[in-house]
Image (tube, rainbow, N blue to C red; front, side, top):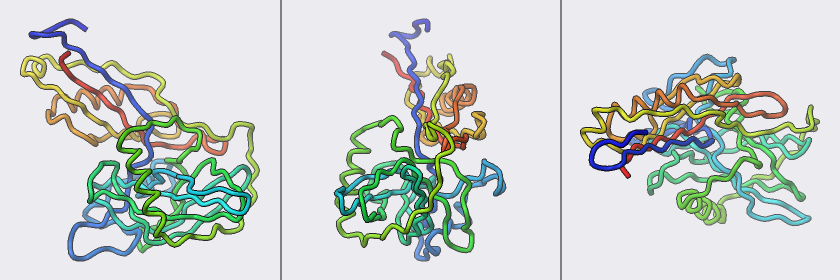
Length: 290
């Protein structure tokens, strides 16, 4: 990129796989909806059920092993939300361990957006398995409530996904460990046998090619810079279904250019149980003067 202004103008962009941020928020009012129900005024528009574009309004954020022995294994499961505020969530989480599928009903979890702050704290569920179990993958398979129902398979948490560590994620894991001490454990149900239909059933999605973003000339002259985070919904065929600005730079022209870069980038959808499924990604673009 050519130099411009008083210093070297450079632009850095990158994309990271993220868990689904669709959520089940509770509006910050005196009245709360039933667990698992998204308030009507905050419910994001979604394609119809039955298509792979219908996003269940929450997703598994993290699965953290708390204890493992020959007698039992316990895991904490936390959930994300697309809303700006945390909210109650009840439903069913489905986890896989080898050829075993566990459908685990739960109540009164708190799903939270992936931003830090006291008002954005997820509250986990804790599941106890009667023997040594390694969870390979997990996803939210149903939500409770009058507006709930089964979720199409997608936005899967994978054990073998690349780990993107940060102070924020480390703090969340630490809080999850602390919160789990006071959570009543859920006994895992008897698993259903579901043989893996291929040798490598699960693989996280990935960014195949990041489209080069261009710093708008007038934005550069005005000294506009910052980081933009774009949430990208990737269909099971790898195409970009939709985008939205998750974190703004504070400048519309920079946000618009970040969206253009995300939309024209190439993604590969994740594989779950040997078939492609949809996923939600975070795409980051940084505009700064070095």
